[in-house]
Image (cartoon, rainbow over all chains, first blue to last red; front, side, top):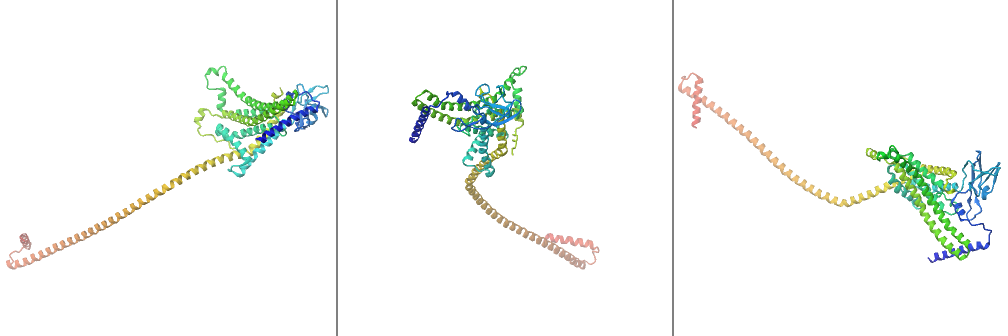
Amino acid sequence: MKQLKALILCLVCAMTLGVAAARAEGKPERAFDPKEIIFDHLGDGYGWEVPFDHHHRIPLPVMVWAADGSFHCFSSAHVDHHAVYDQDGYSWTVPAQGDNKGKVVQILPDGSEVKPKFDISITKNVCALWIAVLVTLAVCMPVARWHKKHGFKAPRGFVGAIEQLMEFIYKGVIKPTLKQDSRRFAPYLLTVFMFIFIMNLLGLMVIFPGGANLTGNIAVTLVLSLITFFCTNLFARKHYWKEIFWPDVPMFLKFPIPIMQVIELFGALTKPASLTVRLFANMMGGHMIVIVLTLIIFIMADFGSAAVTGLATGVSFAFSLFMLLLDVLVSFIQAFVFTMLSTTFIAMAQERGHDEQHHTPAPQPAVNLE
Amino acid sequence: MELFTPDLGLIFWMFVAFAVLFLLLWKFAWPAIMKGVDSRAELIDQGVLYAREAKEQLDNAKLQAEKFEAEARTRQAEILREADHMKSQIIEEARAEASREAKKEMDAAKVAIEQARKEAQQTFRDEVSAAALTIAQQVVGQTLADPKAQAKLVDNLLDNIEKTN
């Protein structure tokens, strides 16, 4: 405990001195804009910040189809810091403001900006996505290898921990909800859980290879919830469609004005929307709070005295640490919630009607995946 | 707001990345893991069941053994009793058989004796009647010419004798 106190004191002193020193250096500072920093960190980018260096970025490939349909590929280093890059008669840049802020655009000879037809650049988020895929594979494959090699023996150590996590989802969420259909949908649901969980955790790491706000990006969560939406509706049973188009309600509610049908259809469509926004908002919120708490240091430093800055540093450090730890919890909870809701939605579409249940007491064999 | 408009490029890559990840895990990871987890759970369940049964059987074994012993003892006594019973029965039967046999022999002997006596009687009678006839012929002479009437007369006489005897 004493050591911990001493450590914290040292950290606070060091941070205070660091900030004071930075101010004393009298760098030509540009106006401090917290909003820009926050959105810069939360958003996507064509390069990836080199750890502890605000000016250099790890170059990533930019791949665009120009408005005239021609394909172009170049390093993001060429357009760093809003530079203009000329290649084969096409000029590209990333504007600092305007409608296309932060996006690669083509600059026509008359100076106007034209958005490319299609932009499939390997941005920071796409790169982080593939890193997350690799990490997920690296985490899941050893468990599968263990099971192929050792059969029923229980794995120990890291493999055992991951297996516990999978079993928690498989036995705790998927099996009780989906019952005889669980083997059919478990691969998708388990993949979703592991992938979201790992993306969440990678997002919490501050520097490369983490730090990309993946699950706090609406495109990522949208894709995941759309896949759940298609899984729900494409594999749905008769009963599900009957519940939507001819539910058991008094006739005047469904004919001639289809009130219930409209409500049910709207409900089916809001499910993926709620999934998208829940994960996106939770993760983005967590990231934003941590960044804002960190930025308190710089906001306070702008006001003046070293004592205030030092105090703010200590407070900010404590709160950021707390929020980051909380975000570790949130990472798991949100992955769990997304998986649980997906399972529930799919299970609702798999429900057999009461009549059907009575006529077919024997459960249908699950589709064998082997 | 840039944050709330999904980027098409990222959507495309997310689809591709997720598809790749899903296909790889679907092909190589989940079937093995699910099979392993399920079969292990089953194995553990069966193991616990087996152990419980084994303990129960062990607990019951002594009781069972005692029961078997008592049963064997009663069976033994029963068999002994039965043997005893059988012995006496056999003896009884043999005895009965012997007496029956003896009685049969005796009856046969009695019948034979009776027969012999009757035959002897008849013979004696014939001889006596013949002798008497001869005597009577000689006494009476040729008076009684008809031999049949003579025999009847003698017979009647003899019957009278027998009755008086």
